[in-house]
Amino acid sequence: MLTKVFGSAVFGVEATTITVEVNIDKGIGYHLVGLPDNAIKESSYRIAAALKNNGYSLPGKKITINMAPADLRKEGSAYDLTLAIGILIASSQIKGDEIERYIIMGELSLDGSLQPIRGALPIAIKAKEEGYKGFFLPQQNVKEAAIVSDLDVYGVANIQEVIDFFEGTGSLEPTTIDTRAEFYQTLDFPEFDFSDVKGQEGIKRCMEIAAAGGHNIILIGPPGAGKTMLAKRLPSILPPMTLREALETTKIHSVAGKLKEVGLMNQRPFRSPHHTISNVALVGGGSYPQPGEISMAHNGVLFLDELPEFKRDVLEVMRQPLEDREVTISRAKFTVTYPSSFMLVASMNPSPSGFFNDPDAPQTTSPHEMQRYMNKISGPLLDRIDIHIEVTPVPFEKLSDDRKAETSVAIRKRVTLAREIQSTRFEAIPNLHYNAQMNTKHIREYCVLNETSKELLKNAMERLNLSARAYDRILKVARTIADLDSAESVAAHHIAEAIQYRSLDREGWLG
View 1: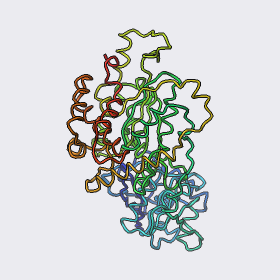
View 2 (view 1 turned 180 degrees about the horizontal axis):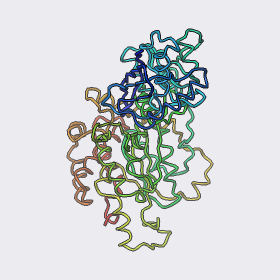
View 3 (view 1 turned 60 degrees about the vertical axis):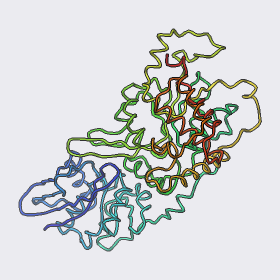
View 4 (view 1 turned 60 degrees about the horizontal axis):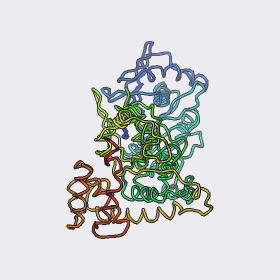
């Protein structure tokens, strides 16, 4: 008897429906074809034990299973439940009425219980697009899949529940989630708040500008100056996520298997990888590509603490994603693209000793050591960072001040207003939402300078020997400062402030 059941494969952040054809005929054997990997080939042992422990069995006949399209490689153990249900229907052990209207996915344990899978959300989205009635998957993944409306999503704990559903004897009900209600459950009091930061008013101003325009920022200062403390609080002043951004972010974390029984992500991600990370772990990839840290930080913040300690080749692979806001991973037979629109926040000591330019600390670093230390970060990478700012230690008087500083909620209101100005300005331009995304054409159109501003910028360019890319960065930051002031045009004082935020371009830093 021939039976068709349906599963799904995830490539990048998109799903492709897989037709599993199960044919049982005279003879003996178990033949699995259609480019399955080893995890799928091993499924026969898990399926046999799970069926036996639930009162069923593998038929003692010739079982041929084809996973179509046959030229598309399938991977992982998530097809166990699909194959098991197909075998039971093909061997007439259970009914198969309307089986073609459902997507079935799940990894089986030997007792028939189900283990979570990756990519439940993109699979559910694809199932809805192709008109399937429902989706069976492990209970641990039901919240993320139930985000999709007009699709019956069944979270199951054991294969017996699926069998009972098709036999008409079970009481399994679809899970429903009010997506908008879940999305609007935001935190009014963030875990990390800028009100906890004593002093550092100039640095807070920089962080506000960076958040308002989506600009990359690097913090340079000695140990204990508060660089990490400031970086961790940046997500608390970013504008709230839109529903579209929340869905994009949730899809990526779903594919990576990082949701952990969470439905829709409504808080911007903050990723802080260790400096020993490999380039594959950072940008994504592997034999079976998975999203890396830069994609996990999509629509959020990627924090690289102690930037010069990262391997140079690891940092260099970020250059293209920083510009294109997506990363493409190519293999011999396929190519996947992951979105990676993130804010880069980096921190570093100003020298190997950590106390360069500190008048209260002795200078123990030679010029040669200093140059070698700074050369760990390439000029092209630094050019892609809009704001460079020095962080100095907070004096005792401010540390001991009991007065509360401005809260993240108050700062976020100004940031959100500036972002709304940018959204209105760019509403007719596809894929352009905030100032950091502007290209040269947009800069020329929206950052028009008067003669005073031009002269000021010209002098700064000549004195600091800035590159053309740094010139564009200054104009972008100045446009954001003007937006925070609700100003129509970029004035000289906006340019002057933006120039101050290029610390590493000054003479004495990079030689």
